Image 1 (cartoon, rainbow, N blue to C red):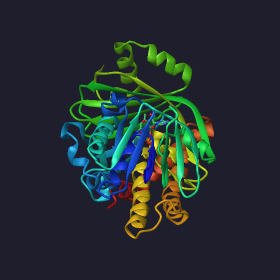
Image 2 (cartoon, rainbow, N blue to C red):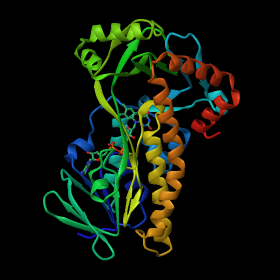
Image 3 (tube, protein in one colour):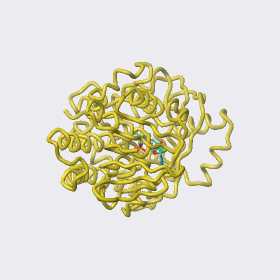
Image 4 (cartoon, helix red, strand yellow):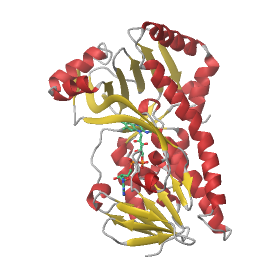
Length: 389
Ligand SMILES: Cc1cc2nc3c(=O)[nH]c(=O)nc-3n(C[C@H](O)[C@H](O)[C@H](O)COP(=O)(O)OP(=O)(O)OC[C@H]3O[C@@H](n4cnc5c(N)ncnc54)[C@H](O)[C@@H]3O)c2cc1C
């Protein structure tokens, strides 16, 4: 089986990359270890993905945004960040970015289903589902992937989009700096009696962090970070006890709370690959950069990364050049690294500072938020980054 491109991983990043090659004439195989039903109709996984204006433009360009049901898309107008029991909040307003909204929230399973539907309709894509990868080899002027069932497929370019725990990254001999944050994150939806006004909240408390993401109606998503022992206690609570616990942690800001759906727990591990490319291969999505969710940038970055790779590949293809050449891959590596590293480093600084509950760090946390709130250009810079104003 010969292809131009093999994509391993039919998550949102891998599928968006396959979508970006639509109409190019390039023959693409997408290999996914989960069965077809699981990727065609993905289950709700609790993740509400905050998308920036730049991401919306990419999704519009791929013909995906208009496929979202408006009921699944909620606006993010402002964001507030508070520390401990302080009454002061750092407020990032959409107006600072000269826009009506900072971004939008779309459930992860909706993004996955929408991009799957569009890729499944592409005649240049073959989906190989229910089969992982056993080995990768690079014979001659191509790359060969040995599937778990023994089949061998060949292409000129291999794209690994198989999550932050990427096996293909390892098979390619690419190392990664990874950090296990030693905490767990629970995401779940709840309804409440007071309106959220489409404002997102992030409370960096001592020993836990709670974020609230405003969904349509008087419904929000809670994103609770705890150490493993306390997370076990939270998971074991019945709905009434968890609702009371959240209400207490929110200090009643959204009124009375009632849980509305399933809970999902994730380990928090950040990853930054030592290189985004190898011979005839590139990493995209979390396989390249797996972000801590606190700054809500993982998929936004993955979307931009796949667009950068697609641009380099399509340009080479149009000019009759080799789509898997070192020059094409070096261009992607240079551009994506320049964009990803500052965001990754800034996110790590936020995580380090606001997870530190020692007395000195507490003072620094509070002072940092107060100062940031007073420096209008700083607030504007964040808003402008999200809205691209
Ligand atoms: C709680 C939470 C909240 C988040 N919130 C946000 C947010 O607000 N904004 C944002 O931008 N990002 C957010 N993210 C990050 C975002 O979800 C990820 O960046 C995104 O899902 C990564 O997509 P991906 O396609 O790279 O990887 P994944 O979604 O991990 O998909 C990888 C795919 O590869 C498949 N696979 C794995 N191994 C193999 C193999 N060996 N062979 C074949 N297939 C394989 C998997 O089955 C899967 O389908 C959040 C993450 C979490 C955990």
